[in-house]
Length: 225
Image 1 (tube, rainbow, N blue to C red):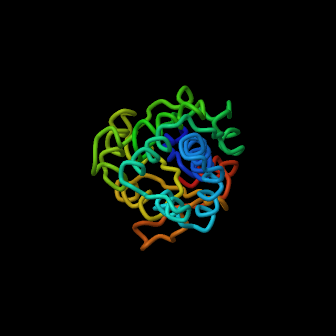
Image 2 (image 1 turned 60 degrees about the vertical axis):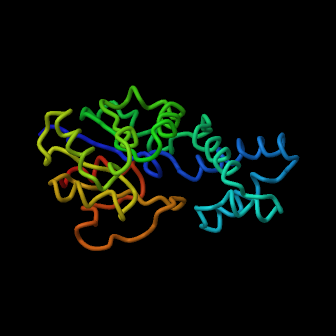
């Protein structure tokens, strides 16, 4: 039996999304120090992030510093954050799996988010040549991020594969598995202790078929599909 076609999510699946955030805060913090003389902006953002407050961080920190969180300033900080070349690396188990010489199956990737941001992440991780197809849903505009079926259908056609040949490996049960489940794909959730999204599946339709805590267990897990 041929190895299944694996399609990976990116954030918190192959690397830790928190590391992208901390990398971005350093870039934004350096800009704030040069522009406004603020020396601890990155540290304040990081502290806020570590509380689990993942949105509105720049607004909150600016107000805490007594600075105006004007729309123009927020826009500039968000641009710096999203477009910076990130200091990120593959998680060790992801590096090991992607380097496996014995795995002969094809591999793809589906990732949501601003296309330039995601392209910068892929470049920093050095994984483009290890993937047969990459889908950045942001390139299609608003409305096509997961759970929209377009990316999954696109890869079925790109690989010229039946749904039962496909397995999606991702982390976020709120949106990642409901569509591939409905299409007949296998689904595997990786649960990382430092991952951001820990909401349990809303129902059976959103639940993965299997759960692992390391990609070192993925090859064994695939025998059930």
